[in-house]
Length: 505
Image (tube, rainbow, N blue to C red):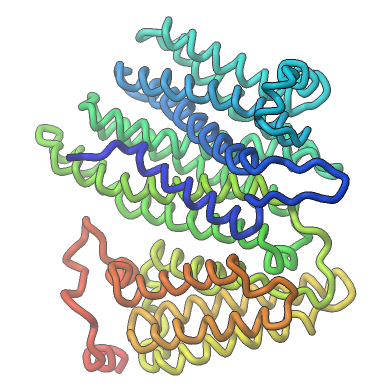
């Protein structure tokens, strides 16, 4: 039985809660003499924002596919109406929870003192956030009305999509975009980032729903969406780079802060998603075009790969909400140490993602294939060197800080790409890396106040799992260039050393 494509997005919730918990974002912290934000609000507000963003994506995506499909379907319209209704409910909850957070009032206090309406009125009248939430609610309600009245009329459907897009863009005017420098650029960039992500993620789910309900001309819809997805990815990458540059103190902040580590994790997942789409969507569309009379096999393949792609998209949404709830780092100072999460992202996550996107990168180094164990040892040593050199090499000037960070990023990324070749070649090399990473982590944070905590070991555990997946699990075949559409390229079993040495000669 085929699962609903929306279910894959739910993976973002544990990702969100885990990241926030490791960063202390779900803990009541009270200062003497000041009120404390209740734990219930700490927990439920991020979840509500996550629900809001998923509903945003599904509404925008369904509205988009209603436009590009040759014949809009009732199921798509129901998806748009249902997600818009959830969006409205999430906005209402956001108002209440934001009041609780700003005024540090428990839910029982808001109810007992009967001040909730007054405080919500103050929030709307005095803050951009309150006004944006109300404006979003009006636009989403308009979209719902148009959806009920639209039918097959394209004009109404354009109005639905326009209202949803503007409502999705509006949160860019609030949050970290409200910084003193680069406010306009940050507002526009963040708004476009949200819209592009919503069109990509929600559009993919809507395409899956459309095809799963036997919508006409599936290959045409998929080709049209693939073009939109490509544009969306380019916008996401460009605006993501812009937003990061406005919030971070250069590359130094990227590698020395949890905020930068989350950004690097999002980059890794984005690369994986690009690889997934480029590997499969075009071939599936060509399969439909080749035989429109029996699309069952292509449809089954499409839904199988969409399920995995949506899982990764769900993880991105969890990371995005966690990022929005994390304060950007301050100015980097000489002696600041590398963040373990950034090391894991640069050394393991991004290189594995690149190898998945371009399998030749996972098997392109002859030295790593010939001497994988030695390369694995050198990789672990390079992490220790980078962790030791970075704090001492950070000069007192901004140029010195950024140059040191640039060298560190290049060293870790280069080392990670070579390590991929080693661990997919030799499982012994993978074991060496898995044994060395905890030791290197201990070295990085051995004398850091508050170091070696849950966040640190969560990042290490993620790295261990990815290395094991690449060396012992299905990742071995994927990185070596195999996929469901080209199974003839998959080795039948582990690659033994004799053929590998023969090939290297």
